[in-house]
Image (cartoon, rainbow, N blue to C red):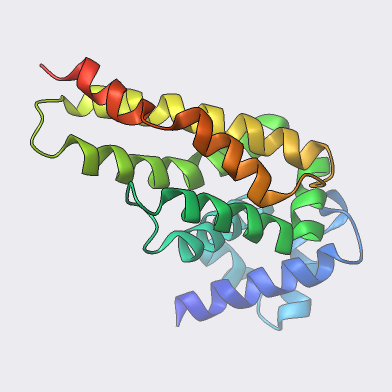
Length: 184
């Protein structure tokens, strides 16, 4: 039941974002559109930005379901870019209305899981500490998020496949090399 309510709140927020900026939307607007009480909203989220974060992470999690392996990470990254493009009105509105730090945090949570899955897979049979695995995943996460933020800032004009192809060429073999360098 609670996930149904969260999804209904997400749908209401996305509908409202088509009509007005995020910083002009109130919790009352969302709950009225959704047909639930303010208390129901606060049962699930502490504020609108908490709902926005949940939307970003939830949408990204759905997209990445089985794309966290070394052989499929580029497909997963492509799907993340496609999901962002598909939700362009939502993303652009959020991008304009929240601080860059908040936007980065939303994207960090999304991309970290993709990269951590790849790092974990490539570390099997190697003696790499958890701390070093996290460092490697964080390093690549920052690169992905930086490129994605620039792409969003430029209006999402660059072709997704071309962009992911460039990322793939840049990273080809580097995750494995990083892991080898950290192996004890």
